View 1 (cartoon, helix red, strand yellow):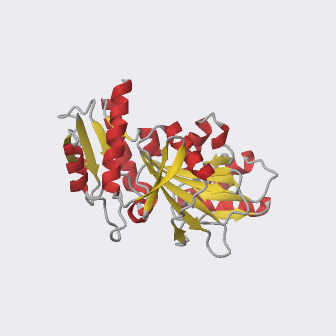
View 2: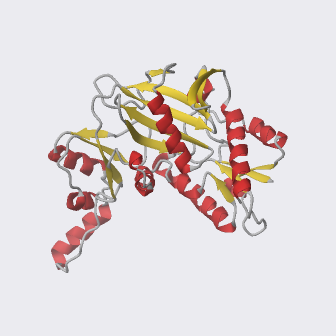
View 3: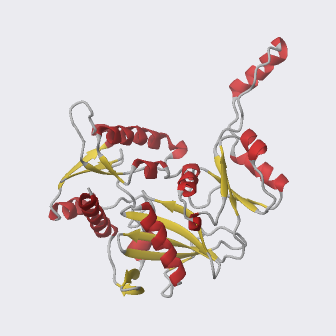
Length: 340
């Protein structure tokens, strides 16, 4: 079987905490797949040639991007969609790439799940401030407003009243346009009824707020291994992501692990990163990622958890993200081939 691994223009594939801006070791990943019996090619996105090469049936592992304004990610999306149309098997699938750095589409994936466990945290998404003003309906405050793109809780705001929510929505969605201003001035002169384009076209989500949480659990799952990181909230803040107050709990609540397991199995992917809030009785799914998530939990945790014979076991062992990625993808491919 063939595997194509795609690197970005910086020769990066996923990320590592070994140094600032480090990539996973692609040579180790390639060697791991070759030992498992795969024919492996490593290419850059710009080297994908649809005219000369048929990628049909090839498993493709790829890098995403978190560049400013997601300009390079937009290019990656073109390449991946072309590969998918040609019959390549993207790992993970294209919609899961689309959800990366895109909370609006992530919420759509949440809403598409029929199980109520996904919908305990409610949300609404909007493409403009005008849509928000027309369609946002809630009597329950506070709410949390999030830009669609972003990491480490950047620009995430909490609003305790409708007025504060309106101001936050206007700020998050702002896209000032000089062209709009010129057209507005022209309309004052000719009065032909020009309907201006919104100056607030940056998409965002409004999510229900879960009170009384001291932090959240980031759980990174590779196949059957669950790496758990607890992130304490920032001082006098409701946000945990980016706080830097991290720990590896030995006694992770079984409810949290079992909830993560249900989410992971529902999406049927080889790996996932899940953010869960737990209030002592209920698990709240905040966010989930399928590609280019942080590897801190995998690379630094002294243990991981495994579901075996009807119970959760804590396994004291160090590992590497490269090893776990290869094993998870190998098992994923075996399952796909077995169900074909």
